[in-house]
Length: 517
Image (cartoon, rainbow, N blue to C red; front, side, top):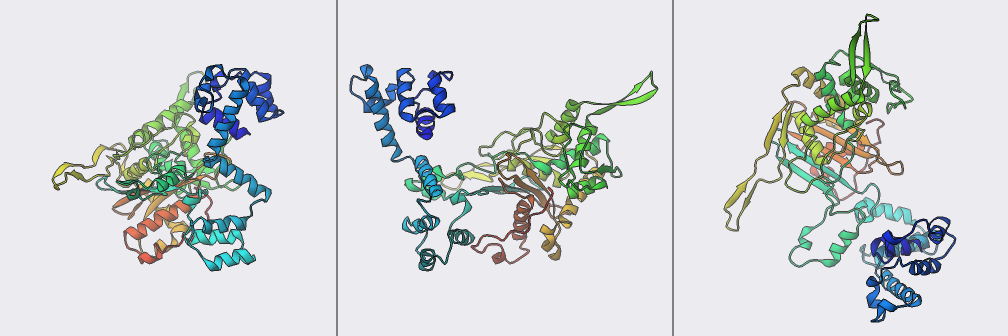
């Protein structure tokens, strides 16, 4: 009833006009808040209060609809609703959900329906196993996902989306720009496959939404190279500066914790802080950026004061230097980035109001890998006419060169990223391949009811980098899973392992989730 009244008739169709509803009306409250009246009573009350837009119902009423009585309007709403619900997938899914919860439809029946509806090719062994009870519906679905006969994207599971952008560090050209799940655009060209289009359009994984250039999340700890560059360049830390992590940062209230809490990292420097992703270290960097020291002539002592806006502005200026204040330059629709404008302490670990696309993070880590070259990225090489004549060529533009960050600072930042890979079990097989890459993981919480987003940025090789990449798995739980993708892409790109070990028509086996980001 709520779906029909609120979602269908009010939000989607507008038969019940939201701007006409008196939210203080007692009958409206009885419907919305108390749930003490039924749909019949609510609709008839809405008709009596002239909340109904009868123009939408003209095909369901007499020619002289202007003078229709309440019973005719109600009957028109009823007929319209029944007609509409026949093809309303969202309502059908809602009904199925209740049928499943009620036990009217079993898990086995749902699995068998996949064969009946030709979603899956007929598999007698699986069908017989489901029918005789030797194969549970859970094991059946898991096996079909493992074999990629069903995919997380098709099922709308969480996580079911991801993206990666890889660049040439020395030119700014884009080597790869991937949004998952993808689709076959050949089926949408010339003669449109309307059934396929509808399937894509209604998929909960939203394949038409480019996850690499349009989806924005907080960068999490992948932002810590910005904070390191700011702290080192502003002179508040150097290679010898040790900051103590006790697990809780007490200079601000409420006191944020390090990811390792109830443990602690102890006294560490900037390289180690990047390696182990110590939050408390970078909380302190954010706070130090907002501190000023003045001499008190009365007490004859120096006094330290803290300004959050000062710290935020300093962090923002360095984020902008890395190109995080603007779109990446890719020649397709891209969302605007946002550099945090509040809470210097939390902004220093990639929280606050920092939000970026994967393409923007790729441009940022390209700047880290190249020691300060900020490019306007490009997807295109050239355009040509039907005869093969070149119309226009495209070359990535070097926007700025970050001259103010010293080579010593770059060494510390890059050494920290190299150590992160060297010391992570996720990359243990890279060491056996005698190949060094550098990186930084990150997690970003967006909701307390969904898993954190998993991120990884990195470059390879560690010495004289050639490629840089950024990876995100929306609601991917652990940043180590995003790091696994970055690792495997580098293996593939440099032919470090046999291709069949990476591409084998089976879902990849995950490593153990690693604490910390």
